Length: 258
Image (tube, rainbow, N blue to C red; front, side, top):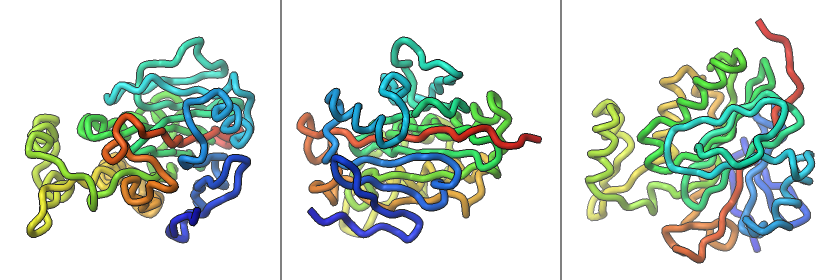
């Protein structure tokens, strides 16, 4: 298997199960990774391998019952007894790992360069319409004193506008959620002779910028899940046979505040 080329801001590493993707700018802030289809989530062995790669015991790995909304679960020192029903996790506890799963939806990992707090976000089209990434930024600010300008974001593999054909009902949903028309026109593309496409990763990037995250601090892997089925997973292409990749991040020890 040949791992696809990624921008210079990302690089591949060899793990016990195969390749993992990391962001160079996020690496000094928080230990993190995006997995590939070589790690067969949700098996128990896969979770054990993931916890070892991120450097925490398995019982310190926190994941979600993802519901395609904008709810954010706040994790303190101890993981919750059950998976929260939410689509984003925020924490400043260095002893836990925050994990989201995706198979076309956008996995985002966020680290605070000042405080060490972190977030993992799962953003499908519904979550993107509901501004789940913005909700995560707001939770980091409210709960841990983060400033949006200090945040560094890695956008993992997700279905790209090359392959994400959608209907006008999604345009209506974004309009009903209150998004500006100029943004909707930017996110929904209609190449000549083709059906409408949605740039869901680009929509999350724009929303983060509007929330105060510096544009130069947002890094996108640029990998389309539907175009790299030997390495990634795509529900749109594989349906119920699709596995899941994970985005995992571990908050760092608390840095200076103020």
